[in-house]
Image 1 (tube, rainbow, N blue to C red):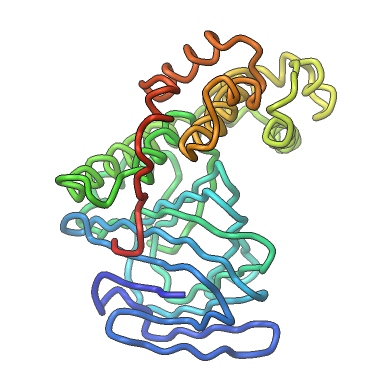
Image 2: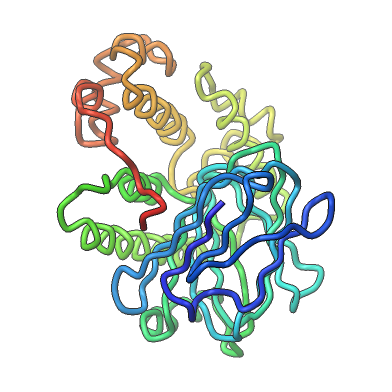
Length: 332
């Protein structure tokens, strides 16, 4: 597995890999660390889109339980990370006892000063993430609003917050991932989408901090359970009453809390999950539109086509007839 940084000053000055059988070797070449195939396949790539604005993409699959220990020269960071596959886990050695997890449809904000980080991976699932990093001069304009929402600290100590992503955010994220390597002015396009993603996140996160104060910890846990139920059963007919019963909430609390926590209604979230699956099936080129309609739980083709076009701006037929494009690669 190749881990590639955009310049030497962004690389960890200490890097160690530990697995079930002890410490694992790796070799360094230029701005890269290379792990053997016995440890993992994939890549981590970092690109500077413009001064102080970085895009980091990773696709990884580990052959064994693995921990990556990284130590950096201490400096302030602002990083927004999105998880598409796997359960990402990490902690900062300076903050003992604080362990963080990031699941698909979630994102995390890390802001502050740190020097040591430990990431934990298992061998049962592939990992796919995308992160946006800003140098201090690029995120200073955001600091006042984020500080007012208690998302960053004045004392510069590292702090981490995990959020659920919204349909709007996930759509821009998908557009970023789908950008083909051969696209003209690709770097400019990626920069625009990254800034759009940052803007959406800040608007949503600041609003969410204000809106979720009245939701108890227990209700929030139940709402997360409701989302998990949908994630696992969105292809089946689901009613508000069924979901409310399974997550131990009243129907009113489910509807109001879901909208507050996830910025969409229960029905909108179900439709979004179905559209995401439909897009992947159509893009594979293996299925016809009429086949995908019933595969994602629709009985009416015209309703499916209307929902798909509203979500992606194109018809299902336009996706299925478009030649398959390459996504972002380690050639970041």
